[in-house]
Amino acid sequence: MTSPELVVVRLERVPLALMQEASEHQDEMRREFSLIQQSSSDDETTVPLRLPRLRDELEVHFAAFSEGPRAAFTAALERGDETIDLEYQIPPEARAACITLGELLDEADEFCKRGEHLLTLTTPAEPLALRRWFLGEFVAQIDGADPTPWDKWEHR
Image 1 (tube, rainbow, N blue to C red):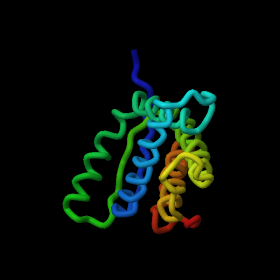
Image 2: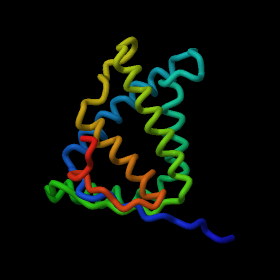
Image 3: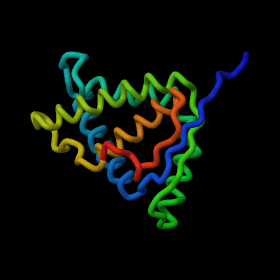
Image 4: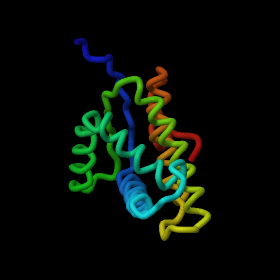
C-alpha cells in the first residue's frame, strides 16, 4: 500500500508566548466542554458535545503529524525563544479538518460569550487572531500558497 502524498506546511515566526496563551485557553475550554459532555443529556449537536468529539477524532487522525512540531515548540519554550518556525508534513485531507475545527471553535466562542454554563470566556483578540492565522495557513498552503509569517499576516 502506498502512503498518501504529504503536503509541507510552514508556520513562520510563530510567537511562542501567544501560542502558549492560546493553547492554555483552548485547554480550559476543552476541560469545561468535557465536563458538560459527561454530565449532559442535551442534544448531541450542541457545541460542548461536538467539540470534544472533533478534537478526539483529529487527535486520532493527525497526532502523528504534529509530534515533531510539538517537540520543537516545547524545546523553544524551554530555551526562552520568542518565536519559532514550525514545519508540518500532513495529508491534504487535513485541509477540511482545519476548516471544520475553525468553524467549531468560532461556535464555541459564541457559546462562551453567552456564558450560560461556562467559566471560560470567549477567546481573547490576539489568541483568536493567532488561531485564525494558524488554521488559515494550513488551508492556504495545502491549496498551494506560500507561507505568510505571523508578523506579516494582514488580518491581525
